[in-house]
Length: 225
Image (cartoon, rainbow, N blue to C red; front, side, top):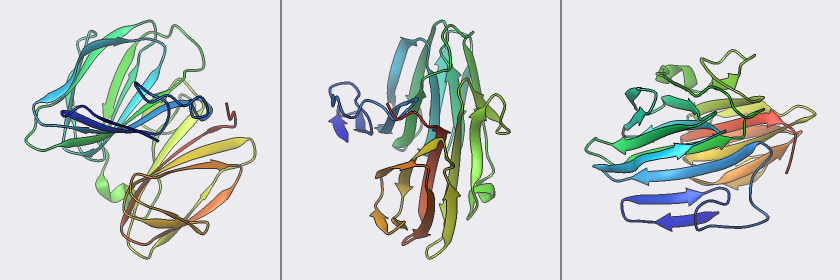
């Protein structure tokens, strides 16, 4: 992974981004970006443009205040999700207006086609719904999650108590990317520590929490490169 420290922003890049470039680590299927960002208080990303990308922010700590050229402005907190389909083009800003460091996973998914009409949405999930249980927070337009994106991809989160186990199935023709957001776990005999990532292709996994673990899985159609 790549790392960056700009003072106000400290990031881990799961895939090539900004000054981190690795030709062998550009993407995982339609998953183009996962940035694990720590945003200092009173700072953030100033107004800037995006086009033809599905952008999902999952909040881990603190708050994130979104503003955009479509007139949307809202703040989301831990366990909540913010979504923007950049489509034909949109300007947006993301700020930490709170009194603690904000930590988010910034995730970019390549859409199934270009030139969608830009759109924004956010959702406030109930914390208990992800306790020792997979919670589907993002899906395709055909799926059942409250946040829907323009791609065949699903996002699931779980907060697993210490010693608890849970299964996840990545079916034939599918692949998944797992982020160990918080805690430590054993996954199919591999140990993952906080902020680690894991690629899964057509395989069922067993997750056992060594410490209380907060985990995200992005499951999608198999397309490795």
